[in-house]
Amino acid sequence: MIGIQIGAVSFADEGVEPVLDILQEKASVNTLFIAAFTFGRGIAGRQIPGQPLPDHGKQQYDTGTFHGGSYAALHSQYYADTPLKNLRAPDLGSFDVFETVLPASRKRGMKNIAWFEDVFRSDIPGIAALQERDLHGRNASTLCLNNPGYRNFLLGIVEDYARSWDLDGIMWSSERQGAFANALGSSHGGAHEDPGRVTCFCEFCKKRATEQGIRIERAREGFLELERFVRRARSGTPAVDGYYVDLWRLMLTYPELLSWENLWHQSLRDTYQAIYKKVKSVKPAIGVGWHIWHNNSFSPIYRAEQDLHRIAPYSDFLKIVMYHNCAGERMASYIQSVSRTQYGGVPPDELLQFHYRVLGYGNEGTYDQIPHTGFSSDYVLREAKRARAGLSNTKTLLWPGIDIDIPTAADHSKSTPKGTEDAVVAAFHGGADGVILSRKYSEMKLTNLAGAGVATRQLGLG
Ligand SMILES: [Zn+2]
Image (cartoon, rainbow, N blue to C red; front, side, top):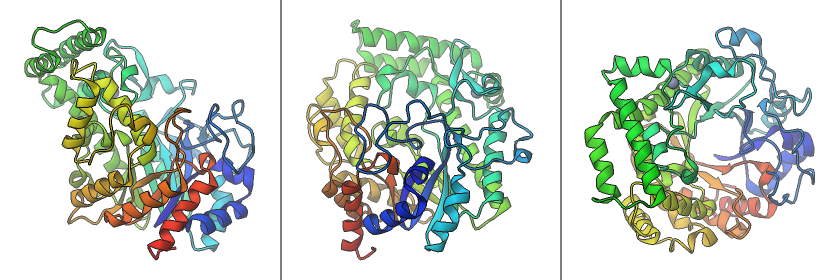
């Protein structure tokens, strides 16, 4: 399985047949992961403004026209039980990505997977009722997985896609975590997380917590304490016993902190299961799987929450992100964040070396180096092997996500043809069943994409 993530705009801009020619000739692609629904620029739209335009496609940004939504027709009967209606993307007029692309790719023997994520705009009519509530009761921009209005939307759209189109699979992504990990900034970009903005404390989540015997008031008190802890640590105020010890004291005093974190991930796993069941009830042959966030490579907390054996029974395939190039910049960002919360006082480079050990990586370079070097293909090899072992005795297919030109800062490392080639080879040597070239064709340089073709020919797959 050689897959690529691709948005509707690429087919609209460059034409279906020319794009499919390029994908087959340059990268031996045999499976399309068509970004069908999102309000995010990570998987839809042209190149992100501010990043250089690639060597194909319209040579202009879609700054004024990008909106997001469904790039395929939606059928109202599937959205009766949700306030989210008519979320058809207006960006490309009447262009329907499934109607246009599926017959053409099918004719070439390619497979088609509908790919979507839980990224929304805040100006959608009716969305406020579905938004998560933060620690202080304010609306968040994210939607609550325990809110029936949102759950019904997700089940509606997968039923719509599964019934309305001849698809081989559906892949969904939720790049989020719970309140405890978010308060600690335990992710790349985590230094920007506001510990008072953590979620979710809505009525549906509180009800679910109560049913599980979690004391809501104790949880709230614990998170208010955690908010103060993080603000103190970030301001550099000295802690008598050190920040690491202080955090343990908080966790021992308020075990509800971990219960609330776990509740969020239980809700995610329940959502996976519900989507899986819904799609299988429509058409058992459609494969269903999930994109696992890159934070899985950085935060031991998040990694612990991705229990592959546990989710395997409702995962036909897993796209585990192993983006080697942007991993350097992102790991440094994660380290920078947690070196100023629970590991306050530990020099960033020592903390990085500790994480290499804890996560089972070789030495990928120092804290100052990695944003400029990225991670090596050895990281992809180790991650693929680890995931393969985590999925032992399951039928779940492992399709690592490979980074091609995912934006990084101007002076940080960039993708290369050899980098793509080595990462693809490493994924297969690590036991992968396929690879997914990511994040979107509209940001990839064809020269770097071609590295995947070199790899597949080398592996005898092209
Ligand atoms: Zn909630």
